[in-house]
Every structure is written in structure tokens, then in C-alpha cells.
Image 1 (cartoon, rainbow, N blue to C red):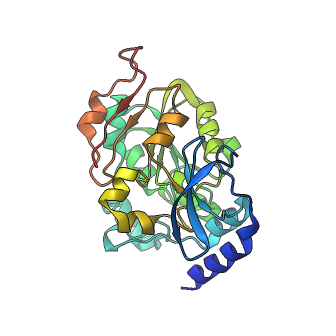
Image 2 (cartoon, helix red, strand yellow):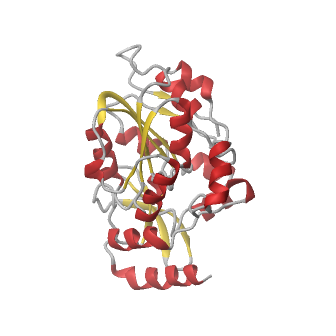
Image 3 (tube, rainbow, N blue to C red):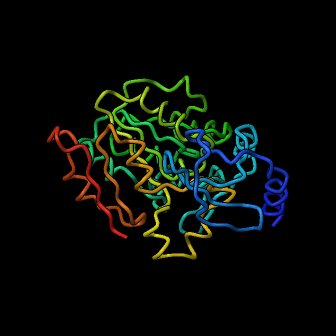
Length: 280
């Protein structure tokens, strides 16, 4: 409750902000949704990003994710941000973190190999990265929270907290539910393009911000954007952002279509620039 009150008063103080897109800097937008009297979900008519107004500064978000951020959703997905005690950690490592989603099968479906250099961007304290290493990948992580990045040493996974220390020539960068938190998405995409090989793959999972999903689940759509989720991504944004590259879009966050991922080959036909798979 205190966090919500702080968010409300901070948003109230920031009402004087220019209503510009944090991704492309343009001020042409449509109002998609409103809540808490002072916050709006705006859709940029240039780059197509849906974003929350007023925005928080990079400095505020950096401080927030160092100490205050918590994301424990249910008994089945505990310790997303909370650091487990040493005794619990031993058991979790022995069983390869069974209560966490394992992205290794999705990556294998795309790369057709378990031998590749992978960066897990927004890896928290490293459990997802541990999955990848156990599958055979040469995996490293990136996490803005220094305490969680340091915790990775306990499970023998390297986690960076500075962009400049991340290696180059990566085969794949995976970002699972991280883009929605970023103050400037374009900076992250530029970072990814610099670190990936020429034929490397950028793979991201994020909440569905499309009009089709809003029609299907209006209550969930309305709840999901806000303080912790300042960005809402959809197919329009992906098409605009990656229009010079092949892209694949799957919706249905809890049931990834691994067979479709395996069959997709963005280099098999140079005339085919994109593949879109929608399953609302």
C-alpha cells in the first residue's frame, strides 16, 4: 500500500512532464487507458510503443531496483527476487530450480544446438542462467541489481551489472519479462545489436499489450500497466522496431509454441523478412 501511495504522489508531482515517447522522443500519441486519476497509458503514433505517463527517471529506477523491487508472485514461483538462504539454495541447485520456468528448450528450438554463447538479460540472481548452463550453453547474465548480480557467484554463474563488461559475439540474447521495466527500450536494443553476432538472435518475452488481448482480457490488460510495468509492447511496435530484420511473434506467455520456434528459419528464404504467429 505504501508503494502505491508513493507511486501516486510521485506521479502527481510529475504531471508537468512533456508527453513524449521515452523510446523515440516524439510527441504524437493516442490515449489508450487511464487509472489512479493521474496516470495514462499512451501509444506513440511514431514507433508504436505504449508507455505509461508520467514516467520515472532512470536514476529513480536504478535506485529502486537496487533495493526495493520485489517480484514474488505465488508459491510456485518463489524467490524471483528474494535471495534464498544457503540451505535452501543447495536443494534448489541439486534439483535445477524446478519451480522456475526453463527457457533452454525455447532457445534450443531456435538455435538447433545446446552449444552457443547466450546472455540472459535481466536474470535476477541467476536461476534461469543456471538452467541454461546445465543444458550446455555458455551462458552469462546481466542484472541491474548489484546485490543479485553478486549472489550469482553462489551458484557459479557470472552476472554483469555494467553493460561495458558484457562480452561481444553472442549467439543469442534472451530477455524474459525485462523490456517492460526499461526506461528507454531503444538503448537496450542498440546494446543488443552491438553485442550479438551478425546472425545472432534477440529473443524477448513480455506482457501482451495488443488491442486483441485487451478485447480478450480487459481487466488484466488494465491492471498490468503501471508503476512496475511502464511499457506495453505489441505486434505493431515489434514490426516497426525490427522492420529491417526477420521477426517472430508468439503470444500466450504460459504456453510457448516450441514446435513453431523449431520450424521457424529466418534465413531460409531471403525474400521472407518476417513471420508472425498470433494466438490470442
